Image (cartoon, rainbow, N blue to C red; front, side, top):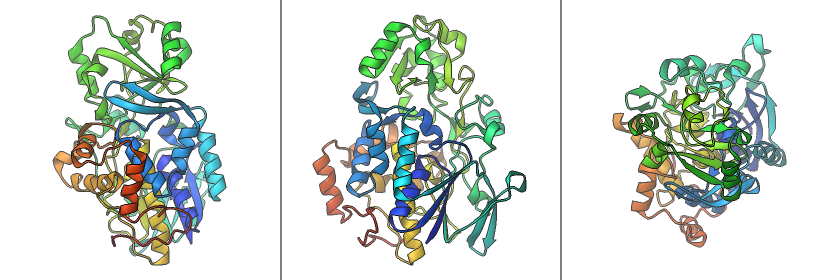
Length: 436
């Protein structure tokens, strides 16, 4: 079984490990020189319903990436506005930790490989390749998994945002993101936000040493610092929050205060703040952005070119392409994309073996989210929303449906009742619940 995963973010790494555990020969292609993409500047997990989802995946045998996050946690049990029991991983340590997980699974990782072309054989992808100016490398496989994300490219950030803010995706250096499904002829979808195409990434990184000593000390002691903004124009701040992909942070507290989290850098929970405004706040006189470097003017634009897919994460209209992460829809956060990656990798191997594809049941938060997001993406109103286990409309749905809990034994019992304990473990033989 040969599987090629295109894109080395959280979703791609999760898909690659999941497929390798099922006995596939897996090659992971990443256009840049590092794995994890926006995961290199993320850092938040286990907050609110993400705790439930992470423990579901662990109970199903797909917990490798959560173990990596836990091993790199700087803080656990962090409380900040609208969020409970969060963990914060060290963004400087997480990429090598994930690389070790991939190596242990036998995944072959190739860097600086940007796929731009697709060879088709009817409804199947026969091979993918790089442009001849980038080495003309060709990769054939039985099944492909696309996890290229939905952010950028620079002209998109200029057209639908405030211009290229020089973010961690580094498009200018390693080349633009290319949609594999789009190259294969699939008509993809764009998210929306208050009349804007796509949505802006919702946080920035500040150089921690550029902040006043008391703020640094509070961050490193508790993991969080909430600093009131004196004399702030509340209306303009609230409007800025409406740009955010992460609508779970569009709360008044994030408008009235600078909310910082310690992920190694100081994670500022705002899409952008002009540098002169930021430096006018006591304690921020010397503040400097770490990512995006032009965080005073904007941030990356995401949720463009999402693939239509079924609940097994197979792309509509193609027999051997699966998707995960933001390519699979309006899902926000590392926990969300890791969950889709594990399922996509598992189903890619099942597809090669001619076995029924697994659809997770709606009795599990992960299964319900995958189905609910697909359904919402068929509506104009749904394309204007974002879905996350950690807040806003989907977390409310979790609470209404009774799927949110921090009781690990309850979560394990729920997974067992669905017949899915360790389903994602190596060479699992548990039968699928539904045929996609």
